[in-house]
Structure formats: C-alpha cells, structure tokens
Length: 500
Image (cartoon, rainbow, N blue to C red; front, side, top):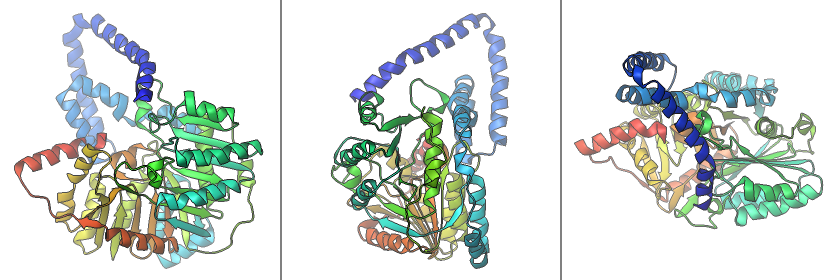
C-alpha cells in the first residue's frame, strides 16, 4: 500500500495540471457552450460511425458505443484517451525503432513437413508467422513443469551455467525466496562479466518492485534493471502492459509460461489456496525467438543497447527432432490479435478435443462463438478455471459467460484446492499452446503477451497428463440457475468485461 500511495503522490501533480488545463478550456469556452455542444454532438456521431466501421472486437465496440451515446462529450474524450488504438503510437515508435524481432526465417523443411501432413494447419501457422514476424522451428528439446516450484530448480541451474548473458523479463517481481535465490546468482554472474539485464512491468509490479529501492540496488550490483512503460503520469498508453514472462540464458535455453517471480507462484506463500501454474524450458535454435523478443523491448526502454552479437553466442546444444514450435509475442500495436485469432482457428479445426487452462474467462464474441460451435459439433471442449479466485469481481465476470458456454456443451471445471494461473490449450493429439495469454479481453487484445505453439512435440504428452490429473481435483460446474436478475447482472458484467 505504501508503494501505491507514493506512486499516486508522484503522479498527482501531472493529474492536477491536466485537470487545470481542461478547466481553463471549458471556462473560456462557456459563452459558446451552445455551439460547442452542437459541434461535440456531431463529433460524437462521427465517433460512433468510426467505431462501427472499425475492425475490432464486437464486445469492445459495443462498450464504447454505449459510453459515447450515454455521455457524448466525456465518452468521446475517454475513447480518445484510452479506447482508441492511436494511443499506442508512442509505444509503436519505440518498438519500431528496434525491429530485431523480424529478422528470422522459418525452417523451410519444417514448414514443408507441416504442409504435407496438415495443409489446413500449415495455412494457420504460416499466417501466424507472417503476421507476428516469428518463424517456425524444428523443436529440439522442451521440458514441461506442472508447478512453479518444479521449474525453479532448473531455472537456478541454468543461471549458474550462464557464460555470456542472462535476460529476465516478467510482469511481476517481488522480493522473497524465489527472487532472492535468483538475485544471489545474478550478482555473482555480473561480477564474472556476464551481461545481466532485467525488464519488468512498472504497473504490474507497482506494489512489489520499484526503481527507487529494488531496481537501484540491482544497478549497484552491476545488474541493469529497467521498467517497461513506466507510469509517471496519466497517458493513453497506460492500458498496454508487458505481461510477458521469460528467462533466457546465452541464447541457448529459455523458460516461459504462467509463473512470475514471486513466492506464491512456487507455493511458498499461500494467498489463494494451492497455486496451480505451469511453465516450460526450451533449448535449441527456437530460443532465438525469445532472445529477439527481449532485445527489442530492452532497446526500446533502456539507455544501454543490445546488439546482434547476443545472437551469435551458442553453446553446444542438444540435437534432436521433437516436432515443430513457433514462439511469438502478441501486441496491442498490431491489428491481428494473434493468439485470439489462433484460438478461433484451432477451435474451428478441432475434431476430438479442445482443452484449456485459464485463470480468467472473458472472451470476445468471435472466440466465444468458436468455443460454442466446436462443442455443438461434438468436440470435447473443456475449460479449467480457479476454485478460489484472486480477484472476486473478475471471477464473477468470468462466471457471467458460464451459461452461454455450458448450454452449448462446453464443460467448465473449477480447481478445488485453489487458484489456477496456468494458460494453455490442447487441440486433439497434435497441437498444444503454452504461454502467458489468459482468455480475457485484456490479455487477448491490450497486453503484450508471449505464447508458444507446439506441433506433435512430446511436451504435449506431459501437458495432457497434467491436465487429466488436475481434472481429478476439479468440480464440474452445472448449468447456472436462470432468472431475470441473474440475466440482467450477467449482461451488465459482459458489457463491461473488456475494461477489466
């Protein structure tokens, strides 16, 4: 709470200046209020037409249409500040100035094999590669972790083996056993001359990590630490957060998944019952995608620069051929909403099953329809949700989608022992995805996320086994009782869901 109060006090002058500026404009314009109101009404109508014609998620457009029609002037201003994707321009300029993520080429042999085996899926994967700029690789070796505590030991071992660089990027970092164990190794590695870079989301870590205290201590130890999109005043880009999670060592090994660097993610601190999260470790050429993701963001926000020499360092890695993999990041700067579009595609291609892990369930209309259609044509569609929520209002919003999904045949389960933070999907016996993407609007459209798709890789067997074991600890949710009051509350919650 102290950290939040301090941050609020820092940005209050900026908010006060913005409010004063608006007040002065309105005061000077008061004699012309009638003409101005008429002009603003015309602008509101133009805004409505613009939103209707815009290519965007229907639920998001409906929300802003209601806001603008109910309150034309403040609604239009709010849309300009927070709802219009043009507010991404400052972030776009930073990231476009560092286009390191688009320099790779797909493994032609791997793509050819996919086209021969599954031409329809090959179209989907090729589109994903084209729109994100990240390539398809032959998967060399991937290890799956059912829980955060299972991953920590391997993460520490990989850090100990670092010889060239260590890149760390997480939404939440918090001092405790997990982070302190990592930092003790980072300090030694920095003394040995290893490049150590830490990137964290400023808003995501607002209560747990700060530039003034934790970050400055890392700098004193030779560890460069930078916040993503720092919150220093109210601006249009405040909505776009870095929800990515990755640890990369020497362009040789990378870790990703749902876990952040805080003790609840390894069940050393109990907050919402047992914390069910997953992660994976990947080795081989595919690690380069993670290295480039980090380099692009680092160069956009840090004063020091990382160059292509980071990509030339390769320790002797494992050899093998374990299916295919493509790793990418989602961006609110892109019109494609890559993971959302991918899930719609995969649900449309599913034949036998489509199983999902997610902590939050607030899909847009296209994804909701894809879930329903898959279940209605006989696909075994299942979603595992938390039994104990971390945010009760978000949990209630997620439940507002239960009736629509269950009535179509989607089976929803809640994890009895606690909170599910895992984000993954299993499609038939061919495809799985593991990453940071929740099935909610913020994650699918507003956050920077990273995700990985595996095709006919052994990691899928481990994920399926884990999912089945988790199901044994879950309770299947029955059709919620119907009623006018519940229908009304669910409708309101679904309208405002894109804001949460």
